[in-house]
Image 1 (cartoon, rainbow, N blue to C red):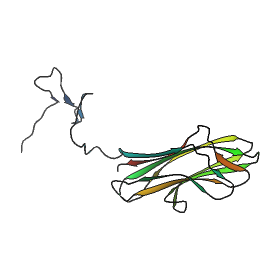
Image 2 (cartoon, rainbow, N blue to C red):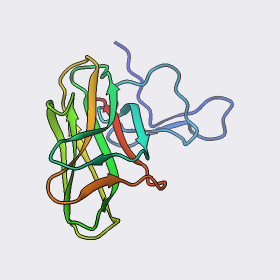
Image 3 (cartoon, rainbow, N blue to C red):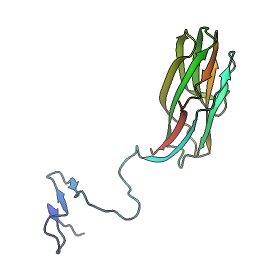
Image 4 (cartoon, rainbow, N blue to C red):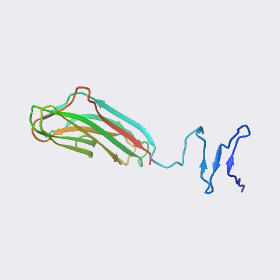
Amino acid sequence: MSRLITNSIRSTSASADAITFDGSGNATFPANATCSGTATGFGGGKILQVVEATSNTTVTTSGGTEVDLLTISITPSSSSNKVLISCNFVGQCVNNTNAYAWIRVYRGTASGTKVINLGEGQLAANYNYVCMSGQKLDSPNTSSAQTYTMTLARLSGGTNTVSSDGNDYYLHAMEVGA
């Protein structure tokens, strides 16, 4: 067995050390270090892919029925990876009546696993805007395609309407490496 013991490495054509080691053996690389191939052994938490859906289409609901706003699909590369779900919604109450708005994100359809549940209190005036946003790290435990559905519900009074005057609402899914 051979062993090289050093505290730095420098190319013969360089004027400074390219890699240095501290007393514990931790390596420091220069800011312009390059790596060819796939980096491994750096632990989890890497964002592996991002899927996004956005809209500013007006959607109206006038009952407890949930209305689908956006649907996205993501296929995790490993069953041990997680999916970070992020959503944002801008809506308004119309008809000068009170209402309670709910935004939910499900894995699958509206009858699937609830991932995010956002509720907004009373919207009391005509064209009273509300903004709801949330994030959740989901563990689907599969490498099969996963669908996420964002829904809008009005639970009482008035009508909740998604603003169509340039206020986008969105749903993101990001695969996070284990």
